Image (cartoon, rainbow, N blue to C red; front, side):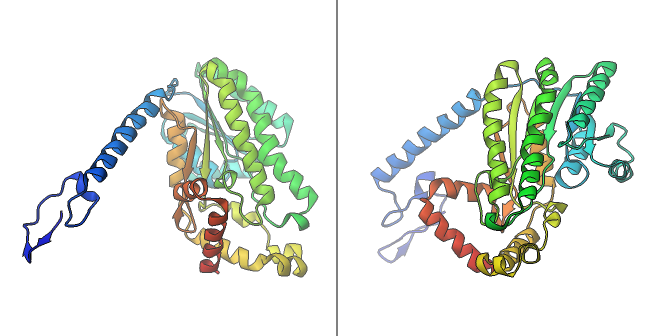
Length: 346
């Protein structure tokens, strides 16, 4: 609606057409503004339709077998439940028998949830899991519908003080474990036109302070996924990356007290205590795993799955907005904005 005052007379309020979103003078848009807005609409509407219809379609398996790695807790656990709720036979990768029993106790109603021992850094366990799942598919005459690579660790700290063994372990789990698991299951995925869903992180699109090692692993997942998507597209296999920001999971609880871990010298040099306090505040604002459940299910069931699923929030700001600003703004401006956020949360 709009109201225009002309010669001390107020016009009757009425519904404003779309052009009046751009006001000028007494509320009426200029011809140039109207042309500009019309041109934008004429560009973006066809562009949206063009992008949609150019997105390739993939086979949707309404039933089948799915493997979710790293399903003991957090995103993987809840994704396994969500996919089982969709009717899929879900193999939930756990490292210990106790974790598998805990899954069954949490959801005793899910008879189609199958815990399986799978540590992605152990080649023998990957091969054994592949053999078991392939035998199950053959026995039940079901396709292997999807591989959800969720297993991951999130240790943070300044590279200067980062323990080399922890660095290697982070890459072993987040990168090499994902690669080896995927490699083992590709023949089944090609045969059945299944899908790959790699759970990365917004850290794969934005490298924040103290996340150099973790962000490095997630950028690796981005590059791997993009190349793999092109490799497997001719076989009808889709590859999607889920890039969540802060989600309420135990993964951050596995990170040590950085000041205690790296010492007073590192704390003083890099402000570890301050940064972890800011991170803790961000985690307080974190979204539930419902947001990741939704996008993982979409990546598995949508005939036109997205290549990238940015979700959740970063210190209260939607991750999609944050990533868009990083793309849009010069790095100098973006870094200043980030510093402002740090001060606001400190």
